[in-house]
Each structure stands twice: as structure tokens, then as C-alpha cells.
Amino acid sequence: MMVFARSMWLLGLIYFLGLGLGFGLNFGESLKVPFRVNDVLPALPRQISWPVLNNLHSAVDLLPSFVGSVSPTNGSIEWKGACFFDNEARLEFTGGDRGLGGGVLHLKTIGGWITGLLMEQVMMLNLNKYKPSTLATNLAIIWTSAAHSWTCMDLYVFATPYRITWDYYFSARDHTLKFESWEEEAELEYVKQHGISVFLMPSGMLGTLLSLVDVLPLFSNTVWGQNANLEFLKKHMGATFEKRSRPWRATINPDDVHSGDFLALSKIRGRWGGFETLEKWVTGAFAGHTAVCLKDEFGNLWVGESGHENEKGEEIIVVIPWDEWWELSLKDESNPQVVLLPLHPDVRAKFNSTAAWEYARSMAGKPYGYHNMIFSWIDTIADNYPPPLDAHLVISVMSMWTRVQPAYAANMWNEALNKRLGTEDLDLYGILAETERQGITFDQLLTIPEQDDWVYSDGNQQHV
Image 1 (cartoon, rainbow, N blue to C red):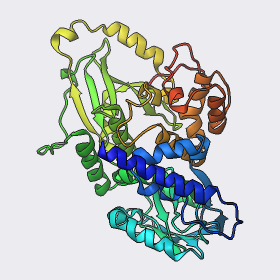
Image 2: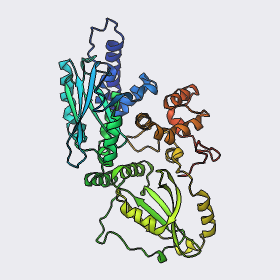
Image 3: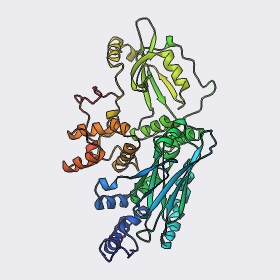
Image 4: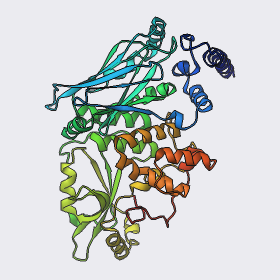
């Protein structure tokens, strides 16, 4: 009760000073106020900062603002920040320790107030060990201009399809963000063509990003990334991976495998390893991917699975020979941990292999159900989100990914959200506007269940 009273007192003081001094006065732009409500949100507990953000802004205002894409070929970009009005960034490539090279992102802020440095020093007492620039793997430079108040800050996220990292700036000076090495050749080519996307975030999200600081290494295709995935699962889910004694690859005799036997996979490094780790965390599952074994009338062993990549790069439902599936698993750079779980003899006796084959053949070649994948996880307003995750962070990620990979974003959620609203072809911002028009919140929209008769633009119902 004492903590709650202190929080409410602090919140009241912030509203009085921030609203009174920051918004109530209209003496011209030359007057700098001591602080505004949003300036101090990063210093507050997340339970306070998010309600304040929600009360002061609409859902669209809480979205990341796309600043631009920085690449070595497009010179520098300039923009107006929430705190520093004139900012500039450029990217240069550097040598790297993995043969791919890295980069330096230069960010410049010009002419800030010295009182801003005082708040930075105070915040650093708690935040220094989490300084994101020590975790990033490229170098960037940003120039920032005069701040609108003494205590404000700008919070940025830097993203490619292969990584997301972030940093925050209290003071007006030159900043750098290092990328020691690109994750893979494909990321290097992406940055050459499209650059690194820069997003300006609501400052109140700093607490949430700090809580998720151990997410940053998960997507690294290195031993460090693999260890980060294992530690994340242990810390957040209590899941441990015990190291096998050699040989690490078991010898599986197909004669010992039967129709209906279950394959559970856990990928633990690289892009798919990081994705599956987060998937396990939010869903509570202890496997990131599953498949089923099927034997035909000649005794040949096959594997049925969804999400298999074909020669065109499409991820589809397949039934492929065991030997082919096993060889692909052994070559997978994400280092999948594969567990074969045979059916209990009593259950195996009831397994209808004929019906299973009929269904598998009817599904073969159809696309993986990306359209409704996240909706197989979210079906309540708040109870499906492990802290500090919530619908606000989900929509932030959606917004950033829509900018970085628009086709991917449309496939993952735009069409499914349109189905839930009874609309067609709305982008994410149009979906948010329509959500408000219909009088529902975005977190309510996410809980609307998938309908079996919905057919998507690829001509199929969805199967995950």
C-alpha cells in the first residue's frame, strides 16, 4: 500500500509539473521547460510509464516512427527527433573478425543542454551495465541537436531482417554504434542494398527494452548466440539442455520407427534458433518445431511436416523420405536438437495410418500457415504475455517489421487482422484506424479467433 501511495504521489507530481510547465505555458519556442511528462517516463516503473503513455497518446502515437534507412551509398539522413530536433546519421563499412566485415553507424546530436548530462549520469547508475552499444555488432554515428527540455532523451531501434538493437541519447554530441560483424553474407548484401532501418521509439519503452536486453544475442549464428539461447530458456522457462555424451548423433534404424511416432525439434542458434526460443517463451512450449513419422505400405519411412523450404524458397507442407529429412537436419546451421518420441504401444494400436496418409497427401504442397501463426498463441487480453511482453510491444515489433520486410509483415499479420475486422487490403496503420473506428482496442483485436472458413490470398486455409 505504501509503494502504491508513493507511486501515485510521484505520478501526480509529474502530471502537475509536466502538464503545467510543459504543456500549459505558451511563451514561445525560446522557453525551455524543466521537463515534460514523457521525458521522465524512462525513469519510472513500467507499471506507471505505460498507463501514462496510453492516457496521453493514441495507439498510433505509441508506434515506432520510421526515420529512414542508412547505408554507405546514400550519404547521410537527417530528421527531427522527439527530444533533439536536428539529427543526422551515416553508416560506413569496416573490417570484421568473421570475414564479412562490419560497420559503424555515426549519429550526431548538436547543442544540447548541460542539465541533460546530469540526468544521463543518474540514469547510468542503473543502466550502465545494460548499455546496448556494447552488445551491438556494427558501428553507427548519429548527430543530435538542441533538446526541447533539460531532461529529455531520444530512444532508437536499429534493425535489419537479421538483427534488432537499440540505443538512447540524453546529450548533444557525436555518438557511435558498432557492428563488429554481419551475421551472414545475406545481411551484408541487404545492408548494401537497403541499409539499416532507424526507428524513433516512445521514450517510455526504455524500461521494456531493458527488461528484454538478453534477447539481443539470440539471433547470432555463433557459439555466443547458442549459449545465449540456452541461458534465456533456463532463465525464463526453467528449461535446461543436458550435454550428451559422444556420439552426439544417434543412429536411428528406420525399422524401429512406426507411423505416428513424434519428432520434436529445438533450434538453438542463428535466426531460426532465436525465433524458436522466443516462440517457446511466449507459448510455454518446450519444442520450437514438430513433425510426424509415417510408414507406407512398403515399409518405407517418411516424415510429414509443415514449414519445409522447397527449391523456390517457399515454406510448404511436405511428406519427404526419412533419409532426406534426416540429412537436412544434420546440415542445419541452427543446430537443431531432435528428439524421437515413439507412441505408446496401446496408442499405436489405435493410430489410423490409412487416414493419416490420406490427410497428409491432401495437404502436401500447401503453404505454411504464417497468416494465423501468432493467433495460435494469443487468445486473451493479457494472460498470454510473459512479462514484460504485452500488446504494445507486439504492435511495435509489427510496425518495425512492416518497414523492414513489408511482404513478410503482410503475410504474417496484415491479412489476418483484416479478416478479423471484416476489411480488405488495409495496412497496419489503416488497421489501427479501423480498430478505433469500430470501438475496440488492438489487444482485443488480437484475441479474435481464427475461423475455419477463412480463405486467404494464397487460396488456402491456414495450417501451422
